[in-house]
Length: 74
Image 1 (cartoon, rainbow, N blue to C red):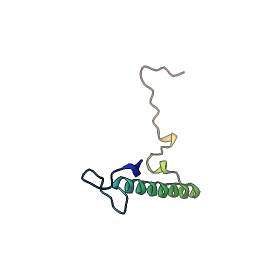
Image 2 (cartoon, rainbow, N blue to C red; image 1 turned 90 degrees about the vertical axis):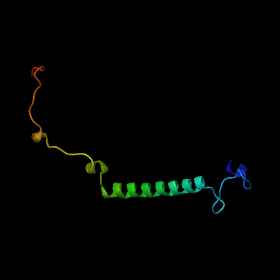
Image 3 (cartoon, rainbow, N blue to C red; image 1 turned 180 degrees about the horizontal axis):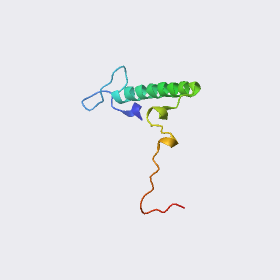
Image 4 (cartoon, one colour; image 1 turned 60 degrees about the vertical axis):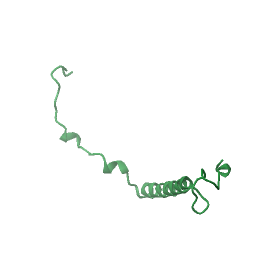
């Protein structure tokens, strides 16, 4: 459908290297996606888990033994 756009005149889209800015942005996002796929694959091969950087690991012994007042232990 982009080939049907007006190329000349007052209401035409600006073009840089025969492509519109939206088309250049799509190309850039596609390249960014390919780079992210490569980074994720490399991290998987190294055995890295990205959730380790954002979650806090707590040991089960470190959790307090608190029972709410309205719950009776069984």
